[in-house]
Amino acid sequence: MPGLAYCKGQYARFTGEPLTALKELNAARQDKFYKNAACVNMIEIYLNPLNEMIYTSLTSGNGTSSGEYTTPPENIEMARALIEELQTQGVDTSILECNTMVCTK
Image 1: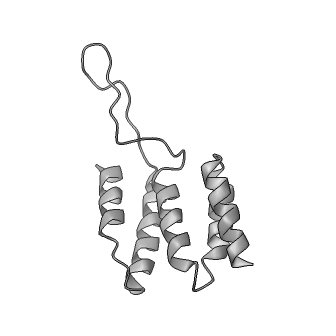
Image 2: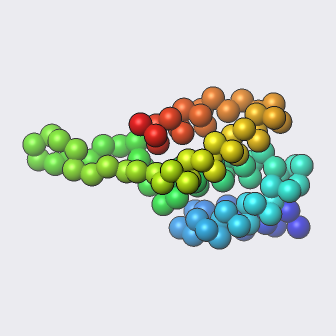
């Protein structure tokens, strides 16, 4: 059933239900075939739970930033733990690590 859990997790992620997505992807993470893909998706959810475009800047009329996206420290810790798990599997995590650094500013 890990394949079904992975699909449910993907569906929940893209329909705006990050908690359900994390639950399903965590179940899929127990399978060796879906483990890496589930971990990557979980990291992306932890770093950007609302699936917003955080890399674009919002500016007000005078050119200054009008809003700032912040990721909770707990989410960053979980993302780092999952990145370490992927590294033990021999996965290149450089992009995920850079995304984590962007979230920590």
